[in-house]
Image 1 (tube, helix red, strand yellow):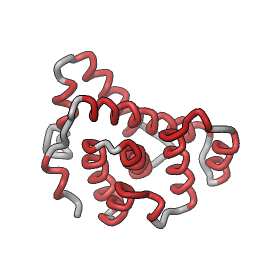
Image 2 (cartoon, helix red, strand yellow):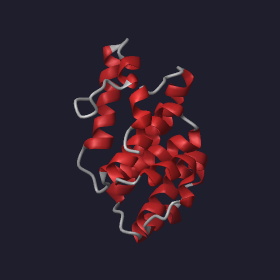
Image 3 (cartoon, one colour):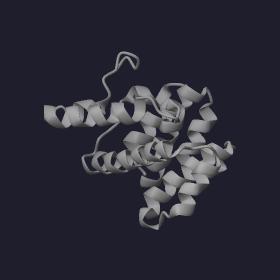
Length: 161
């Protein structure tokens, strides 16, 4: 929060119940900030692609800004928000985002060849777990944000452009 200079509205939304706030922040911090074979940017890219497919206004605004900032590329952030398939990505990132998209749209159809595709571009089984964890977390939080009319902080809109 100090880094952002604001208190994200998502934390205010969960503040009505300290146990829910602690559960949310604990899982978020583990998935998005802990050691991983995925970079912080890659995790934010997953958040944006999942949120794009789910049309989550809050997460697209907040995490789209994070992608713009971490990548130093405002166009990448916008492409991921609109349609990640138009972005020129490394094969590793494309496979990761294709997997996150399939998890979002048709998780019951994920099979071993989908996981093997990730291994073939250098992801370990632990990395696949992390991709799935981040995608699963944002599928859940997108739905909560949409259902509760959670709105992003205005400050996100103008940053890193």
